[in-house]
Image (cartoon, rainbow, N blue to C red):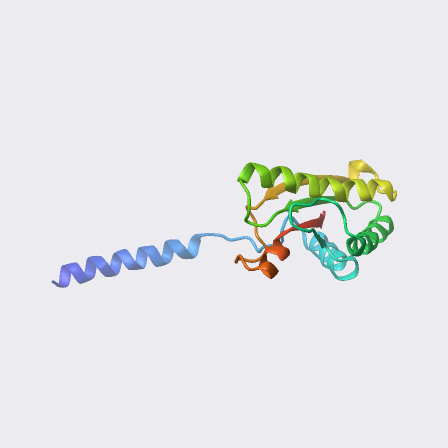
Length: 154
């Protein structure tokens, strides 16, 4: 019995030691350095980083145009900063449909930026469809929070 306890103790000690060796990077989104992280924080604080869409739509609402204009102004003031626009959807619909809808949403924002003087080579787009919800749930408020485009500066 003592040998079993001794072997279990050694096994647990080994697991404990090995788990302490794993390295985890601090979550900074797509940011790498501290300077980039503070740039992203400044962008989010002063320009906002997201807009929302109506169900099954990719056109930009009047309210969202105001939010995007803040982002344009911030990007104009930081001409060396690039950004990625992430298109997101709620959980309804197929994966393929939502990837296409997320792409249309991201491209709508990119087109708005281009129309307002931001060079296309500064803006990338990506669609996550329904794969990265901001919040989990299927009530109307939750679904609305997941129908979004998020601008991530880099």
